[in-house]
Image (cartoon, rainbow, N blue to C red):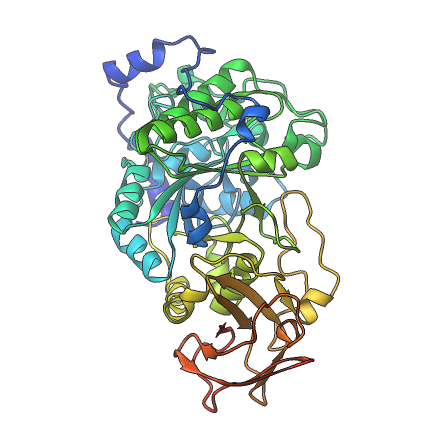
Length: 542
């Protein structure tokens, strides 16, 4: 059915039935600003306690995860932040919404959620594909800034995917598939910013309440449970508090009330307790609502203590952004669409996407996805600096991925099958690399990251290193025209080796290569026949 045809039938939709007595009672039993307790254990919701955290070995060894950044904003297939931009008059999303759905005052984001059915979603098939691509952990979106929970949410009982839209517990499905495939499982939580993110909706349907739903499909539901817009707008610009200092709850941003924060705490604690994720990614500066609330500190302490109690040791990972040194000791730093420019003492993660975070049909039509080559160069660079790569593969509104995405994922898998030895379970070597990219002044990070793609592209003159046991792995980031490689960091007088090199082999084939170690470098002769996927060639040096 076409989208316009679907709209014609909205008026005839069956009104939403009331919540079950059990669910309503559970939600109503607590005062609006009451919160659940945190698990008992050694960690307290204080930085001086949380900074005793140690990153678990599973995360350090995994190196590569894949993320399904998928929710109702993928339904229009029109890219990032649709649930906000559809309300901004000068945006392409607003124009698209008018042409495709109608006036946002009549067909708002709540109505997009209702149209989203995810009827082609096959979690088992997708996660099996991602495992074959070499991922060691899988992360599912639990909610976005749109405030819609993608699980059977006890504390967001009206606006969740088990209740409306797909009428499926998506997090449960992803969790089951990840564990069936032997992958660690994570969730990402983004809902803290709904308070300001939805502010443009106040001019449309963002101020509706339960009383306005009589005779409509959402009769019995309170739109404020989704939009949370019965508050004054942020002070600057008139476009909502999501830019610059306002993203960090400064600069005149409207500050959420206590009830909003405690509800978010309860929703997230319920998510952790119900689905037992190994990793929780918070799309926040530091932690949710930090520094205007302590709910993030409580959530981190709860997750760490719960992990110790249920697993016998601390196996949990918490990701946050823009961290100071103490905060970096307390959790795992995430850099969005960017990389560090040095070997980091503590494990970290970069998150990026092969397209836009939310599915965008225009990226497919323009064949504008990142290539497998770019993905793998990013992975190698990040791992050489003590990091992990979390890669988002955009999921269509119906729950499938497109043919171009599948081809990229499959190519990554073919390379990883041949070269994964040089990625998994490794640690940084004495230096992370050499060559023109390293020698060029690195692009600085902005905010949460955002320096990817701003530097010189990798070539056969660039090398990245990892280490494991007695081996050093050198990745040659291209195939030299003459088949000769010189690695200066492995010269005979290098202070980084205690013994002379005895063997060099091409990891993808296991075959030994001719080499000569001299005062100016390690000189390696590559095979006569250039192998497939030779844009990144791992050499094992022992």
